[in-house]
Length: 313
Length: 126
Image (cartoon, rainbow over all chains, first blue to last red; front, side, top):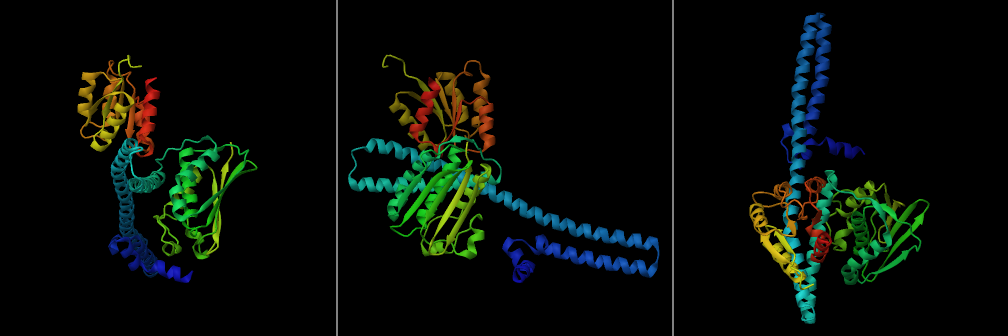
């Protein structure tokens, strides 16, 4: 706690981190402003005591107010600069992502044509390489798609089409799409779906993103040859979606951070898992729109269980 | 089926690789295809050809997709032709704007396979 406070006060390091000059850096300017305010009060007080004249006091107070306002302007400029940088960053990512989408879509569609043309004519070896290209392209599309989704949600520009949705076929579809991942890690997915599951009030496309991220995380952080359980069952007027793995788990000290944007747990490099740290951030942001909830239990080296509760129709 | 005249589709799309794949699948499905690479050319081809359906991209050089859509819907001769938007812009304001201007449907390229696009076209031509 104390060290964190001290770290916050180390404005030179902070400003360097923000890539801002000292006089544009809010942390520094707030400090200056508080010092100015304190000195100003002391000076005003002593002037008022010594001269006992209204005119001088008023003059003093006006002067001090002007000074504070000047410093205040600097502070506002500093904050504005950060806000602008933030907008620029979002716009930049958005433009780049859109630019990436076109060639990626082109690859996808042209592969679709090629696949139909080559049907029955490809050798086993050719099929493997063709499959590699297709999978890589799909991975890239998903990555760019998630990135764009995060930006859209952050900017409130995403479209939510909430309808009664059957989650079982959706989960089946997601698990099938993740076949390349489960096969390559030899992870078995055990499905436990309630036969009388009522539909959920969600947007099917966004719900797929939620399922995809949670299930693929469970598979990615499982050990080779492990298993992952995916459950769907009703509970009161909610639907529970539970994903459990017995993989690397999340160390306790990082529990509070896993839903942060771009956060990646320490165990990522140990298991060389891919990802940029957007999945869980996106999942939670989407669930908020559904009035859903997410929580988890996890222990390092023992595995994780993620619970999602969704409103039933 | 073979006796019926082929349905004509006008594709307005500036990316050649996407355009090629679209043309191929449309021809395989049995449509007659005309292509344009920008908005201006699209409107010229529209005047020359009277297509049964238009596939329209939003981000185009010169006149963008919205302007083209507006021009199509303002002209009494063309306003009833279904216009299917095919783009990678997925923000709510883009979708809303296109639908307000009279687009039949809105498809996001990276989400749709060619098969899905063909399905949508068939639906709109019914």
